[in-house]
Structure formats: C-alpha cells, structure tokens
Amino acid sequence: MAKIKMTTPIVEMDGDEMTRILWKMIKEELLEPYIELNTEYYDLGLEHRNETNDQVTIDAANATKKYKVAVKCATITPNAARMTEYDLKEMWKSPNGTIRAILDGTVFRAPIVVKGIEPCVKNWEKPITIARHAYGDVYKNTEMKIPGPGKVELVYTAEDGTETRELVHNYAGPGVAQGMHNLCGSIESFARSCFNYALDTKQDLWFATKDTISKKYDHTFKDIFQEIFDKDYAEKFKEAGITYFYTLIDDAVARVMKSEGGYIWACKNYDGDVMSDMVSSAFGSLAMMTSVLVSPDGNYEYEAAHGTVQRHYYKHLKGEETSTNSVATIFAWTGALRKRGEMDGNSELTAFADKLEKATIDTIEEGKMTKDLALITTLENPTVLNSEGFIKAIAEKLK
Image (cartoon, rainbow, N blue to C red):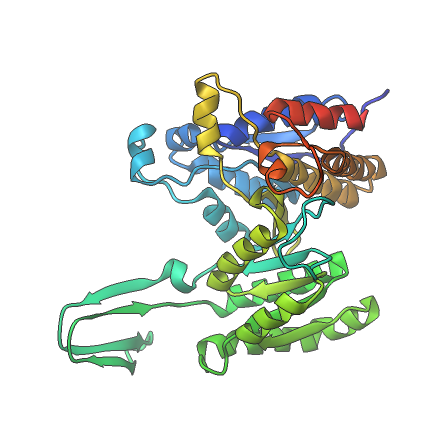
C-alpha cells in the first residue's frame, strides 16, 4: 500500500523520560508504516535544552509560527532535584510556558471519552473542553511577607511620572501580600482564540469570572469578551447554531456539575489550571486528555495533557516492565495530522487521523488496555498490556 504523502511539515518537538520512549514507539508502529512523515524536528529533551541554553524551545515555537501546526511530547520543567540530576546550567523555564508566550496561545483540554471508562459525574455524556488563559494572574505574581505593622499599596507610575495609589491593607501585625497583573492584549487574544475554537469545533462557549467581587480586574475580562463577541462573532455564532454564555465562576461550577457536557468552558489562568484537573480526573484519567494550544492568528500545537511519567521511566531504565498509557500522546499526533490535513486539503491524512483514533478507542473498548485504565474500567476481565503491547495492539487493529 502506498504511503500517505505530506506536502507541508509538522513541527515535531521531542520530549523527556517515558513519554520520549512512547513517542518513538508510536512513530515506528502507528505512523511510519502508513505516512511519509514530513516533520521539522526539534529535540526538547532537557539535556538538549541545557546544551542550547533553551534556544531550541524558542526555535521550535518560531517554527510553529512558520508551519502553523506542531506536535509536542511531554517535557520536564526542572526543579532543584532536576538541577542536580541533569547537571543543569540553570533552572530552565517550562517549555510549555515559553511556547505559549511566543505563540500568544490559549490551551484547550478535553477528555477522550471511551465506553467502559465512565465519568464520576453520571450525567456527563459529552466531553467538556477547558480553555485556559495561559498568561498572568498568580503565575506571574509578586509576593511579600509582611513582617509587622505598616501599609501595603499598589502604585502605578505613568511615563510622565504621575503616580496613582490604591491602599491594599493597613497591617496591624505580620501577614502576606500579593500583586497580580494581566494585559488587555493578552485577554483579547484569549477571547479570540476561544471564539475561533468554538466555531472550529461547533461547540457552545461558556466564560466565567468573579466580576461581582473583582470589579476592575475580573470585570475587564468580562467586558473584553463581550465587546469582541458583539463586534466580530455574534453573527458567526448565530450562523453556526452555537451560543456564547457568560456567568459567575461559582454559578458555572454548579451548572457544569448538572450538565451533560459538550461545550467549551473558558477560564482565567488559575481557574483553568484547577478545573482542567477536576474534569480530567472526573472523566477517568489525565492520560485520557487531549491538549491543544491555539493562537488567535491560527497556529496549533498539540500535546498530551500529562507529564513525562518519571516513575515508569526509572522502572524502564532498570529493565522492568511498565504499563504506561500512551493514548493522550497518540491523540496529540492525530490532532496535529488532522489539522495539517485540513490546512493542506489532504483528505487522506485527515482520514488516517480518524482511523488511528478509532483503532485506539476500539482497542480499549474491546478490553485491551494499560494498567491505569484496567483499575477503573467497568468492563469485565480486561487484558492488561504493557507499554509496548498496548501500542502493538492498536497497530493490529489499525491493519
């Protein structure tokens, strides 16, 4: 059978530890037998990031701007222990954070729904996609420990030297203080990415903040979303038969728990961080979540929503058997291949992505799965496969 040809490359970002091992298996067993893979390869493994002073991450992000579609393996964000383990020059920043900043993107995460892996919330019948604004808030905060009595103020100094002050608190004793910021430009990009992705996937869009309490900070988010929707998207949403819905974050949580799913829930940075883990856990497993970074100017970067599976990697290095779930990494590849096919008008590539996803889901629904799924499945007597065995079972189904 002739292999499917690709006219435009996908940016391929390799990663770390167990997911790097799975990455190679997926390419060899599931992709290369069927596709003449055309990728621009970047090694984002921690050792190579260290060798290049993290320039490789910047290069990979800029290549994504050029080719519009990327697929990324999970990577290590180093802490003090990793500094020693990998003999790092410095504690390099999160590659995901660097890429998000360069692409000005929003992260969309959605569960992969499979029969036999039932959500904890019984009425959830369709996936809930979390859209996380990946800039600012507590992740770029400034903090102080207050040693004793005194006052903390927010001070804005304009370019002409004019000062505006707001009292945070008069302290009678020790405490803590925190300053956060965001940018209107970043919020606008977040809003446009959400509206575009809703149109792209034909799903309703929810957005929620706490504007009744945060009358300037959160209210600005609400206002920007509404202004952009009214001006540029209201008619498009109407034509597509989808809706945009704003509510308070606590009301959104209550509504989500009683809903059947099937929509995008846009969240500020911290809310999105928390809610994506809640949704993934409630649907079954973080290893069964898709993740795509979408920029407002149409760049897409697909990845697994989980980490590098460090514990399994150490077992692998000792020659011990592992049963690591590769579904999210497979779906990162299928997402990127489908998008590349859509952009290039390559229906063969798009169809292959659909077939590989179906083969993966069918394998699990037939009772062949990794240990993490076997522990939570409602299917009787599942067959527990090791890391390589699971990928080979999908390969057999794909044939």
